[in-house]
Image (cartoon, rainbow, N blue to C red):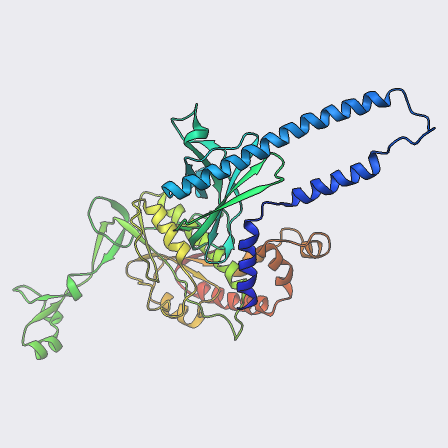
Length: 462
């Protein structure tokens, strides 16, 4: 057994321990008070006449406080035993549901809604839950202090509910492998755990960032409902060929097809049409990292930043009059969700850096209206793609080095010396200025900007 597996088994066993840090602090504090505060009066020593009264008041306060604590601990224990019996008889476990909700007009917050049917809430106590995801990771604990709708008078006998925001390090899909329910007293001196065989999936959605507004026009039509101001090129019929008919220009006959099939075919010319129905948004996740550097944890945070920018571009364009179709460069299994915005957010969240589909094999200049690229694309290949694009194509160039921008100069020194950061992003911001990957990435970004400046497309930097 490896040390990692042994450590995980020990963490699971510790969840069943009824004692907490508060238990140690409470016992230790009580012992110190008894040893150093309570001092019996020695024979012959002068005693203040009000000391007996103070002692009585302190004793009464201690008794009242002890009664409340005892009621809380006993009710917590009873509720825990009641739930264990209920789980054994009816096989009841916590039910969880994840929903992405809007906050200040931005649909970018993931919330967990949990329901525990039949459980009782302790008197002067708490009920908390925690989930296990991706095999060996814990979410933060969330409270179950609400009541099920329609049972306001007897909610403690019917069901208890809770709602909490879930914020994890990476923007991706997670798998739930289990969980725990904790019954705790008012001082959290004791915590009685019950394992939960919960299964499921959820994804951390991208966040919205500030992006400049660009003039984007559709380049593809599925119906003639929307008329646009700018004429656009439209291809002919299938493969741009059709049977030769009387009146067709003989100069458009494809003699190679005639020699092969003995049939006269003519090439259908492009036409200009003032109609459009939607825009195709492309976002390449092809990874051609500069040099032999892998980036390690830097690339994980860069991927999160790129996902935020791509989803923000989609969200900004979807608020215009055109329908926006996001074209992924990776295969994703359909989730059955009907909301196009949530489906797109889920697709972007599941995307990863990939090395299978290059940008030239992914982006279609004839139908693509918007293309998102990043600092890891090959400048030579990007130049070849942009040579086939005109000014109607809009390119968003996401500088991944901006992932670790410092708001205040030399702030990374304060983070290291004064307040060491706990989360991964802020920790990497302190080491990014000295990383060789920083210099290699910025060098690649300058090359990409030179390619964009020479092209005919409209572009901006994120």
